[in-house]
Image 1 (cartoon, rainbow, N blue to C red):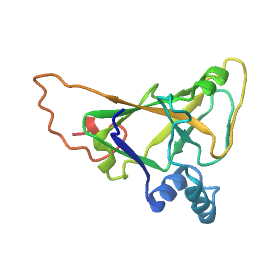
Image 2 (cartoon, one colour; image 1 turned 90 degrees about the vertical axis):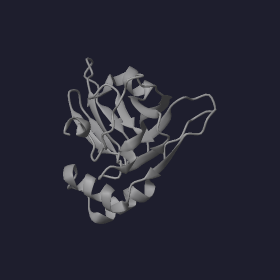
Image 3 (cartoon, rainbow, N blue to C red; image 1 turned 180 degrees about the horizontal axis):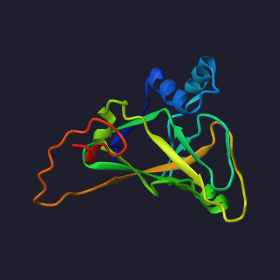
Image 4 (cartoon, helix red, strand yellow; image 1 turned 135 degrees about the horizontal axis):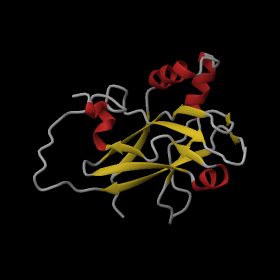
Length: 171
């Protein structure tokens, strides 16, 4: 097994600013405590492919509702690798919890973006059964899997990323 990546926290300022945008109910002290409690993603077992990302705060998501979660996490990885994010299997199976972009793609050059490569997760409760998803702080919400990828023989991409969502189409 190759060791190709390392998870890190974003800066406290980055996390607090990201949280403040959508969650003004939290005080600065609340946000500092949340930041200190952020766990770096890890695998649950030796045979697990996925690294579990944990909710930095508790939330309830009724059917049809969406939430954008700043994870407080960034990842530094080798150039020919990508981190793909998926909902945790149990949450998807029990509640139809889905990521709004289906699969999150974290490119290796995202680490150096202006936002420190801060990984956000946008989830929707797509329950057909009227079930509310209750997530506790520290609960696993998505899992990330590292995959190596290739490029075409005539690839000449030389752009430089400087942003997050959709930034590569803004050049």
